[in-house]
Length: 279
Image (cartoon, rainbow, N blue to C red; front, side, top):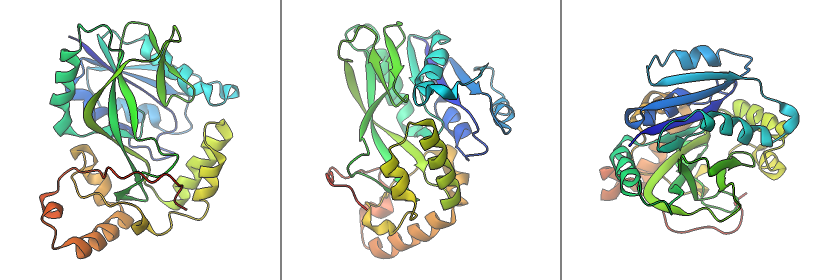
């Protein structure tokens, strides 16, 4: 069994995407990793080269911004086309996998390898917001998504590259991995987040309501569920340097000092789902 990792990235330095941590998080189980580096205004290409792994193969492309949100799926499919593995493991530049889940994911890929009726493997999601210790479960924040697909040319990225579909139009047949994907796209300074939102809106793949929602900043973080568990080890330095997260974690610790589950640092996500948007 061969596993291909793949991703797309552009202006990662400018927008402070943790793309190096993202790639390194699954590199140990990948036989190759395809990185589609778009024409950037910063040192993104040099940043990817700094990973210095023989598994990584870089392709350089020009992104046609006139395509709007479709440019992301198009560029994702260009990277997918270069994958040679039985499975293609896709991560966006702000998505990271916990090292504790790598052996489980490899198990599921091997388990379903010969079951051709399985097109994709699905993850539960943590959408961290404002702080590395808060996540969103309210309306508009999807809680499950596919990131590992069978590399048989019958599955492709679609829309703004947040999901996959079968090329024949039939429903995608996915199986749950019982593993979490750590999405860090909404943990950054207010200035950097507004730059990202403005860029996303200009490209046409962000709901304007989300952009307007962020205009007032993150707001009171304690209205969101707290995360008690560990984060992927590749994120340790980034998390340690995030001032708001340090303050938030201290606040959570003061509130939950009595709770043994907090001190065990179990990776836990509430099953409660808020159906109305939290503002």
